Image 1 (cartoon, rainbow, N blue to C red):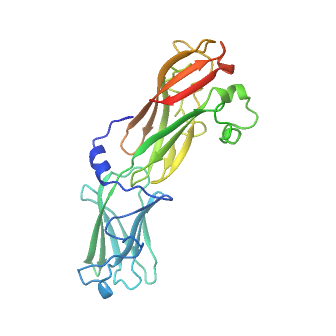
Image 2 (cartoon, one colour; image 1 turned 30 degrees about the vertical axis):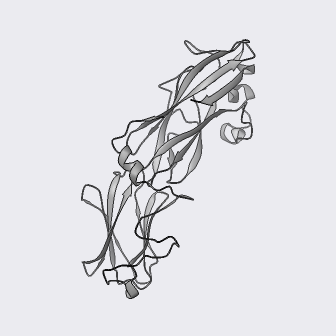
Length: 277
């Protein structure tokens, strides 16, 4: 799989894989999920004033300790500019910063204050990391929710030509897939599909730790068109590449597969075997 990203080596070194769409920031929690100790003396009994800092879905969540003497939390962007400020009301359990999919990846600083004086500061790296896990067809994966996606009025012939692509966000920040492409030895290679190439959506948001299926709308495994590879009784073999484009860093993530078409002269009845390269 190829990936064009100026941050990839840093991200691979710093990322943590989140579970259930939750990414905990290193240094804020210990292995038991409780707050860590602090040497700054700002929390009672040495407890850190920030009990938890985590990315959930599209937001960065900051949870002060119950007895923390904090009335404001600031979030600083990687470029040093203020992202936002949240007041901590008496009895508030947490504050949140909506980062969406238009944020700048990098190291963020969370600063807790009391009467405009810094109580404690924590840093975390927030990067998305989208990876392609699998590609499959309706004829080989009938258990996928094809009718739910395409509607039960669509014929099997049409669904036979579409594909699903499983992608996972193993990074620490959210992202959105904005285009799904197929090139190489597929019957209908369209590298510039109408719209996003994703059925029913212009973009699909993926939270950190989330794995989802994208469903195609460009009919990549439909009838042979132009220079596309078709099926034959004796078998035709080749390679195709699946590409997803993402929003946060404008990346193109790709993965190449070996493919064989056999058993028929018509793609409708063709046996398609896809193997990861």
